[in-house]
Length: 92
Picture 1 (cartoon, rainbow, N blue to C red):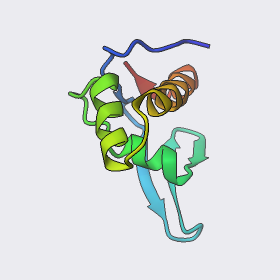
Picture 2: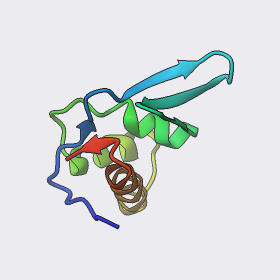
Picture 3: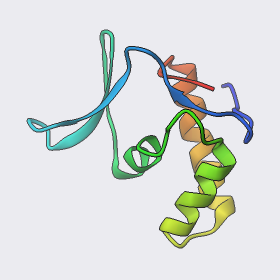
């Protein structure tokens, strides 16, 4: 698995969209011929992707928002984004 650097600036690839699916009652990630159902944590991370913020700053914002340890957030965010990168859903 690719491990993204903390300095990387992730963004959704062209053609990939984060949406709320009313039928499922959940947020999803849509890509050509793919749908990923997002849990609350993945959705919180992906809603912060703006194409300008690096992973370290994104982790700091999430740690502050959820009042938790930065190291824990960093490990989870890097794992999530690295997995989505390997699936071709984001660029960094």
